[in-house]
Image (tube, rainbow, N blue to C red):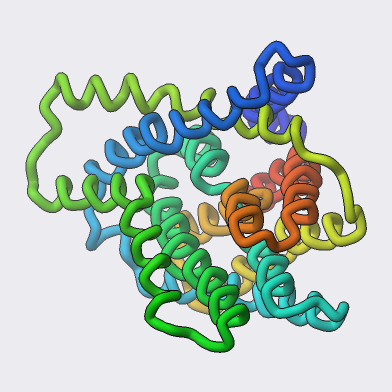
Length: 308
């Protein structure tokens, strides 16, 4: 246990450094937003393109994996929705809480950390998790909010979702990388070195940006934030692990899927909450609490999935 904890500690150390820099005003508040944009549009996109360009789509796409991750995530989403509705929350707020329960920080935290901890075999499953989260669940929350506010779904509500997905640099970089891989071409050495250099900034940049962003968050609605954190850090990986076993997902892919499911609430959930003006403080607190607790829970999950 101690060894696993020490292996994850440097990643959370970078998050802590970002928090300290922002909290002490050495790093200005607006700096976190600009650093996030750099990582999102450039460094992480370069990393994802380079990873995807070395993959065989036929080898990484496994229907069992997709069904298992979808089943486990939908189950936790439904639990989150049911608990929220039982507390009397309107449909858009309930959907946002359900989204918190199963949307992990795969892009900014999962890809850098899990690839470093689990090796290149983690790349394919992580890209699958990212794709499902963005194409299925981000679209789902957007459609629910639009439908609830407009009294039903219309074409005008679907088009912004499609535009958002089409313009997402993570999706575009993964698709471009997979297309390159299918072409059979090898990356020219200067391009490969350029992408490697730019992509190397993704890990420290993303983790530092997470910490800097946490410094501006306030701990409110502690009970709700605590429940959402438990759902994300405990229920989600447990449900996905059960689904992976039920669908017979190969051991390595199942381990990566469970590790990805154990990640804290993603920062882009707050972006959605702020955009729609739906419980942004509650979502912000859930991100803060789940990230803090994940320092302890992720090593436990890593130990469980790597123990024979």
